[in-house]
Length: 536
Image 1 (cartoon, rainbow, N blue to C red):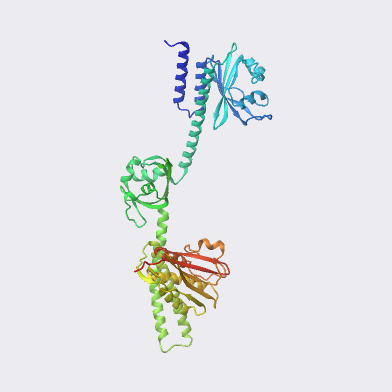
Image 2: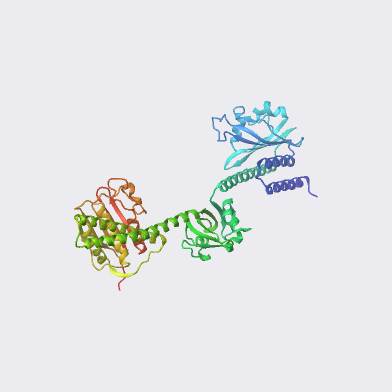
């Protein structure tokens, strides 16, 4: 048979194990279990848990008089019930408060004589018959949360080291309870936040399984697809790109993210096979790593169906308007040119016909720009590939500019033999936009420089004017669609604000780029950069 001491040790171990296993998220229930179990195991009349409130910093010569010690639970062993007790105020018992702040166990075998607890005698110890006390600090986040207090009634009691060790183990369980409750509260806050979002939010593991999700994510996928679980989803949907082409499973955003690619704010078409419904979703995948490997993935889902519908509507409308403009413009321009070539004309007709032709030219240029813009946005821009001397393209564009803008002086320095593989017509179009821009925003009689330079890999064609320049606050948006640096000012020259956007897009589709340098009141320089062709 076990000896009494052996039986006591076994009981302590069993109690500690049971308390360690229990759900500790409910603070009050766990505190009551701790005080009751501690009272039974150590045969103590009163066991309580107290929390430090409105204070808790270590004390020196000055005591935080606002600190209170609030009873969270008090178990009375003789009556077998849990009760509460009045708070103890620091300004009434400074020595006891200072002892607590020393963050060590208080073992007062004679509590009424011990200097750390003696000041409690009249108010607390004598009326309750308490002779011995043991107070053990409860730690939380590196600070003393409060104390687990053992109060013996009867003859003086000497607290043995094994009893102190057991008490410390009980405070560790109390600390775990505080952490569990805090974790649960934090999780509930995040759940409330996630459920309030209109965007879908989910957490996936590295195998693609959904660990947690909010209502919006379930509604977007599970309910819309008519499924019972997330495991069924891959076989119930198909992903398509912006051109409605199916995306292979190996290139789905989750797989790309696992390969180390960044997936942030990308729009995918999701086709639900059961109904054929198509939704467009903006997806962001944010991986969380452990030991260098993806452990979990946070997924944010935003329904972009309406956005895509409006965007497509605008693009198709843009293309339609451009096409509709061409026919009446062609007719008007044709008749105007016939009248212009007629032998007999009324007086003053020349000027009017010239104005008609110029207006039609402007409208024709507008429609061509709209068509190019629509082709660019819809991905329908077709590029041919030919090996040409960039100087030849530039000379043709400059010759045309000299005829249309005779009031400007063109200073040209073009090095021959700078071969590029490009669509000549598109590169000429980009250069025309830059020169027209330079002419529009520089004074008559000023010079426009067109020159080339090279390095080992690229050729740079620069168009520099002496015009109004671009304000510093507007430079960041210079290549943005429909951007006009001087809109609403006396310097506004009209136009759609798409020329620089188109020019840069053309260059980028050739593997090059378009950059800008500008100083307000001094002028601007635009640099076309293209990769040099390899030697034949």
